Image 1: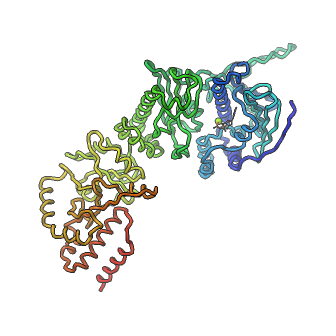
Image 2 (image 1 turned 30 degrees about the vertical axis):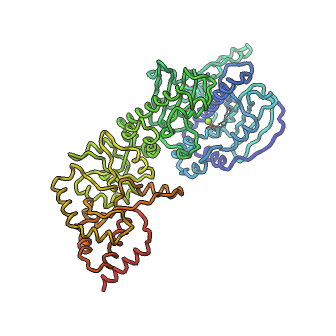
Image 3 (image 1 turned 135 degrees about the horizontal axis):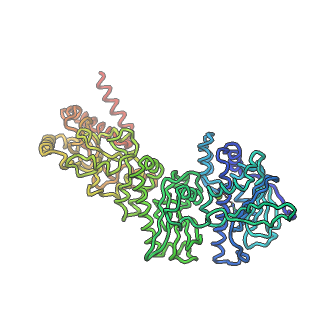
Length: 634
Ligand code: ADP
Ligand code: MG
């Protein structure tokens, strides 16, 4: 053993301590995954070396075959993994193996339930691979040397998985990383060639470089021990280059876990080989869960890019639009150059056509999922629906396709869940209905009882209920679906088209004429607060309602703009009243102009409240209402 210098003991970051505790005490149901995690890291390390060596061939140090070796010693109770990848220097080791360099760690810790099964899923989702070594080991030694540094700059990291770890400088002749697991007494079953081979076949067959185990050899008595021979136990070919028919579902799933650093199986995948003008392979996955940082602007996203089987970069973002940032996968091109950079990717016309083809693949995959596995699609929508709603604004070309994937709450479904597709809606449309009606608002509870829905209830017409913050903005990018226009039921002069009979329309016109006097009095009383006063045919039960002008900003957009400190253009609502309501009858008969004005303001404020808006002068409203109550009770 070589001499150790510059030895120091350092403490783990608090989150690591908590995590290690969890690993050691609760993750015993699926212990063997430690090997998958360590092999996954070794494979990443080799990928990184291959890539860096493109511009610095000297990093290959003579160029032995890139591989991973797994060995064991039953008597010493150890399992050892060795790779000749990029390696780590002292600083790398301290940061990568002493902290969790991921945002959202605190969120992750908060989500832990204490329920072993659930927590183990969370761990995988978070991707804390290396520490899984402590599921089976009570001491872990890591020896590493960064490619391109002298042999004297090796580093030895060692820990018992408790509060701290040691680092020291050692000599290490071979580039890369060797990890020695000192197995817990009860876990010595892993120091076994047969067991290790099975685990590797099960979880790591898809790893594209050879994973070797010592060959089983029978020592012949009286003869010297045979020299160590190794054999490759995995398939060692890039999974995405194999024909679809030859890849098993389990292999696709394991490969996903490797590239996505996820524990859970994906919801769906799409594997394709494209030949012709452009040549590339792609393998795209829909995860089952949203990452913690789905809405963080700077969060990493994108595909793993290979050029002719050689790993080129992680998180290549130019291959999919932003609203599909949750998709994981690999793209392997034959047309790009090996020294392609992010900047080049952003400009290359080849990328544009790949991007539109890959986008279509994803949308097709989602369509299939929705059609064939509706339960899974529900889960997908819960996790990623809000992100999909960014689609129509970003991806004009696929607007109709994306619209088909959207799901909404609706008056036809009491649960309030976003479960209705536009196709469902149109399938149930009334005879003569050539519009898709919707209402936006703050919350499901608020919109489901909105007075705007009264006439639709009466006529049995379905209305979509849109309550996500992004919805009004989304609808400003959607004009129609399947040839049917969208209509905001709170906007403009509601025209039900063929859904109103000729008699209905005639009757409405007559009432409007009849109420001209009342309209004028209301205009005078409400003055500047309204842009118009008219008879409503939206209402059956409520006395009055506020409609938004055809071109005006809705409440949601106004609130978003205000919250972001922008000046919002002034707009006034339209006051519509229900001529058959007794309160309106009373108002019409009111002789005192003073009381007329008080009552109209109360009706106006109430309509604003019912629409989910706040009052400009709430105190005035309360004063008026109380005055009325006092008059009533005398
Ligand atoms: P992840 O793989 O998701 O980054 P891990 O906990 O599995 O998280 O690994 C943490 C980090 O430690 C890796 O990102 C890498 O920088 C470093 N690392 C782990 N194993 C190796 C290895 N065999 N060679 C080089 N670096 C490694
Ligand atoms: Mg890892």
